[in-house]
Length: 450
Image (tube, rainbow, N blue to C red; front, side, top):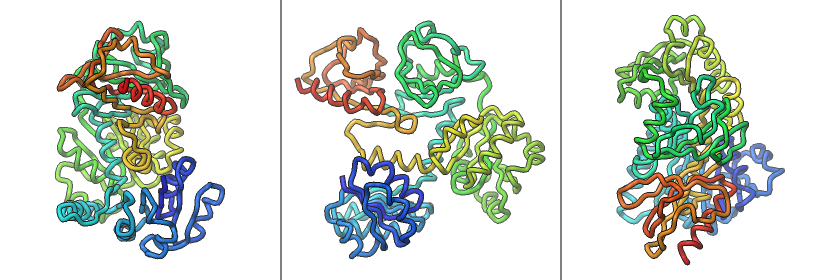
């Protein structure tokens, strides 16, 4: 696949580094010094503006499959994508940072589609993607990741095994999980594996559960969720992420406090947020954190635009007794480091944006529903042909380790066992390691054709 990236900033670097080994990558930027970082990578670079027709032609836009504009200027990204669309049939992805641009593009896209005119295919607002991720995590107590499937009838929940967990040091076969819950995977010391009944839960394991929404609710209440409901959240940082997250939380009964250092921004937040308590102060002010009982909040979320400040704020509130801390990180590579020093969940807008590009545009594969744990695992959806003969799940001879976690049969959602029949017309939701996903996909493709 030929991919042209306009913007050699950090976002562009992450995208290029992710895909250059398997795809033909060309990076465009007006600053030659920005392109020097790619000297050791097997990709091409061009000095110029992505909105310049001659530069786009030099990059070979006519033959491009994907054009991604991710400079720091929304307007430049929009113009470049529209020009790329005018000159080619490439899928266009436009990064925006302003809500106004995103909303305007949505309206324009709808009108253009009706008229059959050219439009931008994907508008990517990383901060909004991050808000959705944080909101899902916050509203499912103690979970570090949440994914919905089958119109919400089935879910994936990820939990960390803590010192007081009733699962600690117990084998899977000895745990009385309800019949609608499966343990699909465990991540231990940065290595993800699919467990068997004899594997033990160890301290700090990230455990991935899949099952029906009701079944996972039962499992959560049995092993992970305290009796008290989530009542209070503190947000440190009133930028785009903090503001949008507070707006979402105002639709729930959760009491929210938001700390913002800038006075004018605090005034804006006070005008826009009617149910949120706005505190104009520095999130690193230990006296303020103590006076406002921030450590007693059920969840503290630090989402300033500084990794160093977010980490400091997180460690301070941890010292004050905060049980659950969610922290924004700019550099994806530092996410695991943050979690090792005490942060419960580290989230990144760049990671959220990269996943969006990977899953929906560049490495889109039919049936790929989601990636898990920074791309270490994939959730696949395989549709069995109507002519497929009834086969017991236990009789499938999978070439690699995988878990057939969910069967969608009409409007029903089934959590299968070894004796469960797989029938024609069934849709299988499968958990497997990313390295094994292609083998699993090929196996079922061959199986459905026999």
